[in-house]
Image (tube, rainbow, N blue to C red; front, side):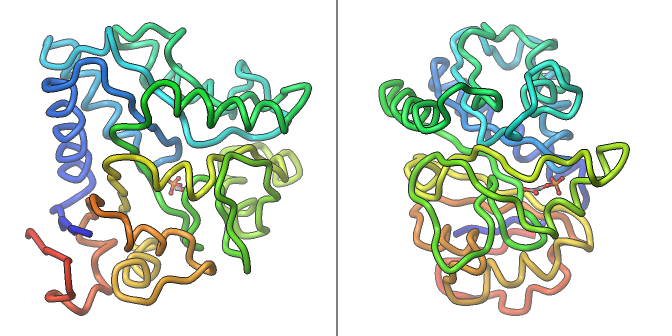
Length: 253
Ligand code: PGA
């Protein structure tokens, strides 16, 4: 796991966008795993700019998003399909038929989950997976628990996640209580993973992710065993990192 401490949110976003741009330069048909939430918005803004300047081309890219709220259709303003369309896909030269977000209103969720994993596998696997992190350590909607799921599945959201995400809804009762999410196995199969975190509210979980033992209570800690993870945080999110010479962790400041 490499950790880069960026000066601020903008620098964090720029570094991540450049990593994606570099990949698309050498592999224009790359498969990207994408994330929603406040954290990656800056990365998408950067990518839109790079695309406008013809420095990054999405015409052959395929994308798979991590998750979607169960019960929301893609045109719901809080659905993750809507988020991706409005924050990135509508503004770059991607073929939307090759952009995939789990279907939150599938007739048969078991089938939807199985087919989502199979589609990723058939496409050749994810080259680069972008992740945010919940302050409870979730990645996608893999919430802290005694057990974690390998594959894409339907999951209950924890109270903390519902509370945190209620900021996007008119009131907390409107927040869906379940979601469809890629599992830990689906995420860990990605060839490269970039996890982003910004702000004081993420400082505690970033210290745990980087410096504590692996635990299902911190789902993101599983990333410690992945061979190619880049954690990019801003200074506020890095504030509680102590050990700057931990095995395998490189601090580039
Ligand atoms: P955030 O969400 O980027 O809005 O903080 C991250 C997450 O919950 O995974």
